[in-house]
Picture 1 (cartoon, rainbow, N blue to C red):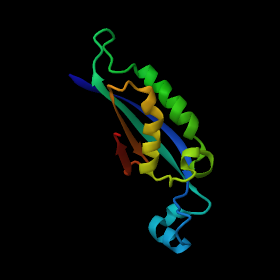
Picture 2 (cartoon, one colour):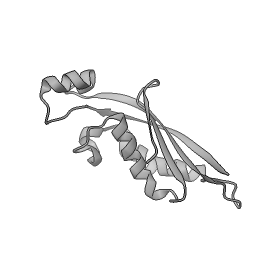
Picture 3 (cartoon, rainbow, N blue to C red):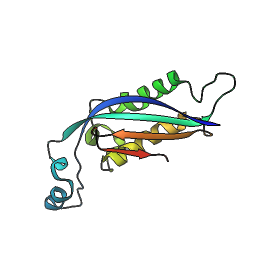
Picture 4 (cartoon, helix red, strand yellow):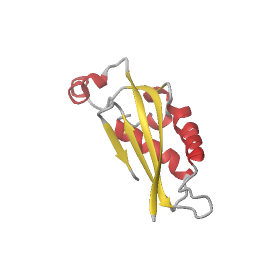
Length: 135
């Protein structure tokens, strides 16, 4: 029997959606307000879920205290109150779209979750716009 255990977290970050290989006009057309040269910010909400068998000794799929600490160390401490374009090495050559941010978060957490468990990241950029990445 598989069960999904989840932890919700949040972080605030600024970014600019921009491709340096495109003209300013194309960037404005594709990314609109999100291409602001002075950046813009979001209050991101994050749900990290781990799916797997329940451990018969503990009754846990994953200890949620452990998941909380993993999210704090590898996501909140690294992304919160940062300019994603300028302060986070993973976005040096990667456009910090919600889709790409969710993949970066998944990649940061995956090495710390048992390989026999599934990992899912749901990232809300706004209350109505969100992406899901499962690897």
